[in-house]
Image (cartoon, rainbow, N blue to C red; front, top):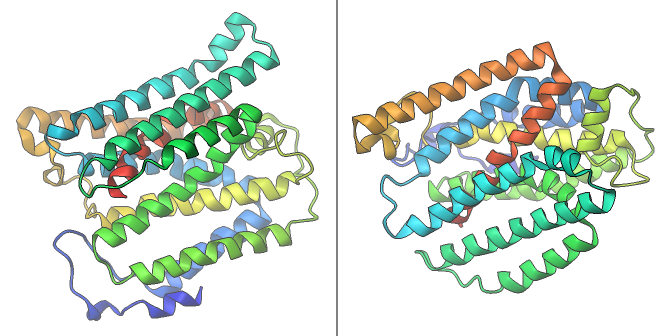
Length: 342
């Protein structure tokens, strides 16, 4: 993590009017990453349980707050883009949430499940490529036509191994947060950008060290439903011959970085140091009705966060299962906003 040594001191730059740039002591960043690494390696199950309990709901709320800040007050020529983005997010999330009910009602066989998952993955790729092509026609314009053959290749691979493709999404999702942070640093023209990119280059080394350290560890103990949920979410049953200790540790480490980015780094760099200040939101500036609506939406989000904590305390496995089903909504919602930053 020596790349952090190139970060400027607090007095070497002034605050940008477009972003809140705060000085973080180098030791704080290093300690956060190393603590996440060590806890994931040594106690992956316990760390996962505590991290999801504490941070799952709040990080979703901060993501929603960030997206509201990045949503234009009037869509204008972006109407088609945001309509496809929001519509696709809701449709795909609802479709996946219905899988258990549809499977039980229609008594799907194993092949039926795989075909349905592959079909959903196909729709996801088509949706993302369609959004990317729409984004490429907006300023700054991009030539992203090469995404079409890439998308076709991904669809083909998906039909060969639908579960593997779905598992890839589980591990890619935390990395998306790191990309958001990189784009926000670039947008703010932060002097941290070069150092941050250097630190991203160290992530494969940290993962490699984690895998090497845990390469011979046995599977995690415990046959209770919660332990099985966490292990299966990390890839147990899909990736054979790999210790569940390694799988859960890897996913938990990445997920903790993901939480740190959304709860601390992105809000500060995007100027959301005071989330209750609605005047930061373009939609809230459209009028009093919009302002009240946004306030109610954010208040509802806080109620859901509290309800999640209560649910985790009352029945952790059930609440975790419900949460990760509904959480697909926020995973998909990131796509149109990330494409706008590229």
